[in-house]
Image (tube, rainbow, N blue to C red):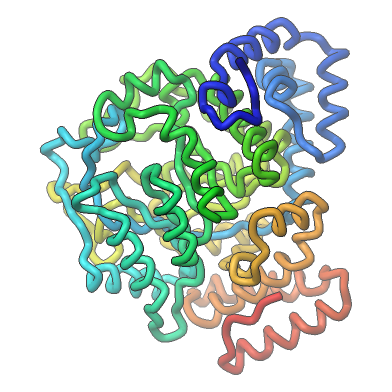
Length: 472
């Protein structure tokens, strides 16, 4: 029985409801009267439910697809403007006891080099990230209660927040670790994390159980209900994601929208972010072994329709994807990307030799952070290192109220300029600095509120004089 207000994963992610949704979408994918009604709903900027969005995904009419792309671009601009937030993953440990068939960290893999960073090594990694210019990290760890207990994660968070090197500081730590207890989520909240991120991998329970044959992650319901426990533990912002390529993409699309609807119905706050990863090659992992692979064009359509269906959510694309693909989907709704990333444990201090591999997956976009910042500005985007909302208490329902009313730009746009200015002063190459200074000058003039515009200008001057960490 489908019930989006239920706390039982089998009911708020109902297999029967997803199958009925896919059948409904197939039956109506050429119904232009219904499709026009759905597009009219989408134009209201309030989102779409999983059934309406699935009809648009099933529709192959070129005119409709192009209209979805156009709408996605408009909605992204209305909610998030031309900002792109930058972050980097930091892998703490690849010890793992799960048996996930798509991940090289699985416990039976004897080829991969197992590494767990000490606190001193974490310090070295963070300084390397700070020297690039990063202010926001997503920490990652395999699931191993003995090697990577919650105490290790908490100690690592404390270490990271207390590292200040030159003008560098990590101001927000998002956490991507295994599903855990309410008590542990409370501890993460007390440690002042940003967003708790957990990929579902697949919402198809039958496939999920086959893909996770052993280990604690085998428990589909415990994993799928993790966000409810996180919110019960006081974490305001949670991030969803599926690993496209494992299962049929239309099934996953309906599932992730149902999960977003569930969080909204139960907690009054939908997902802060939705990530868009695809299966990539890795040590002893061949993406061709899975039959759910999708083309770049289908991937772009998924990005556009998630933006339309969940307009308030941040959308993330990592360096799993190539420069070409990232450039394709940036205008369709993406609001956060990683840059200068390493998926190996300890990879920022020293790049691994191939025979020393500890990476979770191959990185497709291997450009430096400065190259990514330069590229974004040439495309017309403001690279942002902002963490102001999190530290000003604009999280959870407080963030969502501003975002859904399309008012968050009043803070985010000037904050993006301030953090870009910091980057230009402290880390940028000469070419990047030149392009960035021109962008800041242009963007300063379009701040609509005169008081905010003048204050932003004052802060920008203060940054030149050595001041840091100004925010609205």
